Length: 193
Image (cartoon, rainbow, N blue to C red; front, side):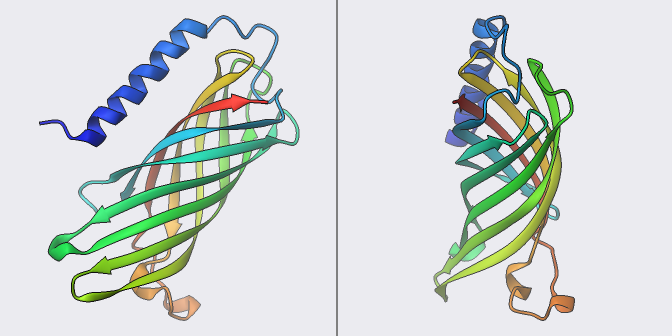
């Protein structure tokens, strides 16, 4: 039986595919990176490196282009992971990524990215006091942006995240572990200004 998150994921992919087919030829004069600002919703999937399964989440991203080649992306997501015995971890990743477009001013451009993130993490459980902590992480990855028309683009990205473990967050720098590291895949729609 398909879960609600599975239906949401399939619906977003189908909607973006239809939107792409309907508008692919209308962005004749513009190219990726020509607009200076964009904002839009995104869906993401995060899988910790040692986990069997990952989790889906939603969020928003905004991009500022300094030049057609260089841009800065800021994003905020929400993720909740449930574990045995009623323990849950809610994470609010706030990321900043420097982006370099490899084929600027074309309708389709791959890009590389790297940056940092601040992860507001709330640990909750029946035998635990609710605890909120902030963790630091770095990420690097690549993606592809497709300009649909003068006002809309879609993009997908992969990034690997090196994230401090909740259990060793308060440790000295050399004693920290990064077992919460993992892979993040995003799919987004951008409204261009």
